[in-house]
Image (cartoon, rainbow, N blue to C red; front, side, top):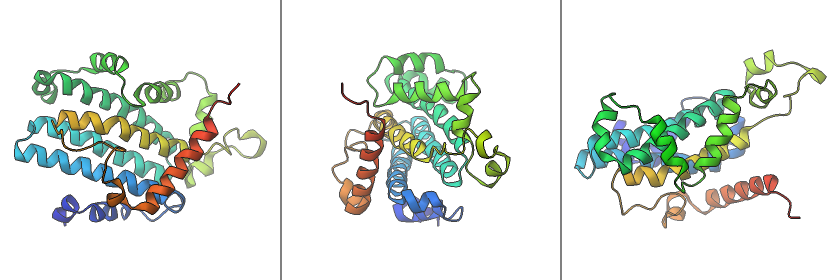
Length: 247
């Protein structure tokens, strides 16, 4: 079973999806989730192979692997409606991505970080803020404002969308969050996080041959026209919704 999951993206995807019953998120955004899972599987596989083959430091391989696996927990939380927890983990993922990029440029620090003797959070965050990492700065800033907000209002935007969340949510006119479903925002957050993670993880793995998402030249072969088109339409619609109107 494990061999199939490691070698076959479909087996990986099916194993992940089967952990819980299909949800409305799967029905509405299945194409996007399938694309995310393919590139997470690819990242996990490349990380493992690089460490075993000696193409990359085994410790760097495990650090890279941790970034891709962190996305799995976020996607699962989105699927089951735990939006508050998903956005908290997305903010943590931004910090992990910064550390992956920082260690990719400072490889001599990897043994100390891996052994727990170094916590480069501050240095990695400063490093990331100075680099043109795809989407990192805006995502880190946005997630931080929500997670660390001292204003009660923003909490209404991340109420969990599950049976327990619904049971304890205020009703009718008292419920400021009754229409504040953030599923699409969180899915886009996962996509843009992958776009920030993938190139930095490949650098950490010293992989110069693999193109990061979404610049993979084999993307159509890997995920198919239908899922690619649906994801493109989803992202286009999302961007247009938040686009500033031209003056």
